[in-house]
Image (cartoon, rainbow, N blue to C red; front, side, top):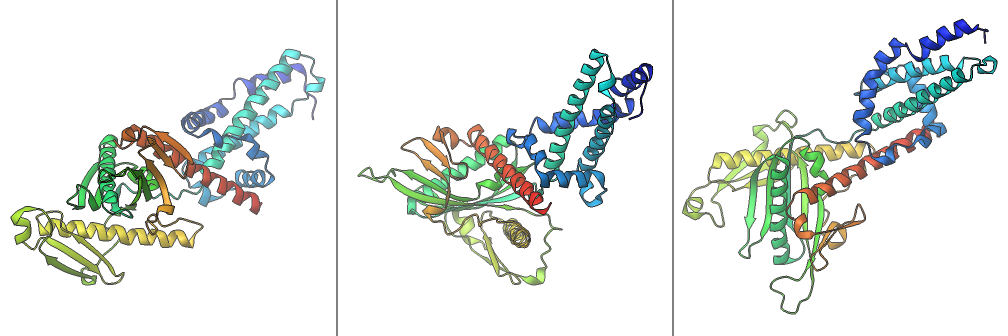
Length: 398
């Protein structure tokens, strides 16, 4: 290194450590990014040991030193890379000081503190960059169709289907979303065989997508005289509802039939052909709707249901072509396929994906903050899995 006298060192010292306006003007934006994203990032994400992985280190260094337009087009990635490059330049200038020839201990100490500060900020930005590059498999959809169907267990399963229906309706109100009942098939015992709710609101799919699957209930039914605990199941399916432009359905591909609605509803329902049955010939999908007295309204709801089912099939096919290992949400409705168990005798909810138990079952069925807590934990678990898979993939490639 070229020798610099004390005055020149002091000038560079002041310029580098205190008056680097170019750096601070660019870095101030990224301090905002850090405060915003790291405040919401799960603790397991922030692990500097990842940066010591040879594969991850090679991947990041290559990315930061080159211009990958396809990657940098992602939100925040370009800004993070520019911030990292800026810090690396300033850090390199600090490392070029020949501290062995410097006798000012206070200056050396301040220099070392500044290096450590830059290295800490660099690690945080590199970790945030790594996190920003994790593939996002979440569907950007503000409208969903939530279907609840009684599974194994007869009348007890139908009664619990009614309870879950009320729970999700309550949760929709808790989140401030909009909803509309598209299908509702009640039983004489106070339960329901099947129900469908159309939900609209910010992040409704992201929040409810993990509710799809088999929900198992264990309790003594009201009709059980011997006190024996019964096990029943209810299946829940959460389907993103696409816009009309996302799924185009031609009128010539539809076979539409009308008939009189069945079940309770008064004389008007039974005397008019208000129920609609819609058959989509290219896919073979058949949907029905008899919720409303108006045939026009039922036709509209049936078309929405059809569009949602077709869209879900398209998403499944797309994810199968990529690396997705998404399982069918409903399966065969068997007791062994449960995602969550509601044990009334023990006042316990067990989420089998989280491998955790929660209590206050009745509070949970109110569909408010108790359910919201589990939903947030499930989303964090999904994010953690995606992050781990991404790190493993780049470690193997590099």
